[in-house]
Image 1 (cartoon, rainbow, N blue to C red):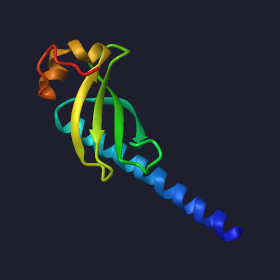
Image 2 (cartoon, one colour):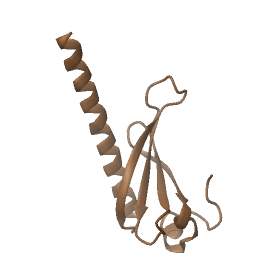
Image 3 (cartoon, rainbow, N blue to C red):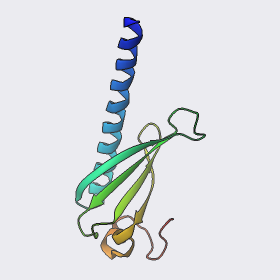
Length: 109
């Protein structure tokens, strides 16, 4: 029983480390595009829902977007960036869209 608890604690520790690493990767990728990150959060995605983590998605607030806007970063399980899209106030911010090379009016839903 004690061994099982220690194994579970180690697994959870690694998982939270992976989440922090992926959020750092997303933040750095956005900052390299010339945007200032104010805050971010990360979610692990599993598809199908009963499998392990298949990707991560970072929701990042950047300076210049309204309070309800995010830059969303889709990432591989290894934290490699797949693509970006915007939501809310970031959908109409030309500076953000230009930095991410997203044409105005092509936001994802």
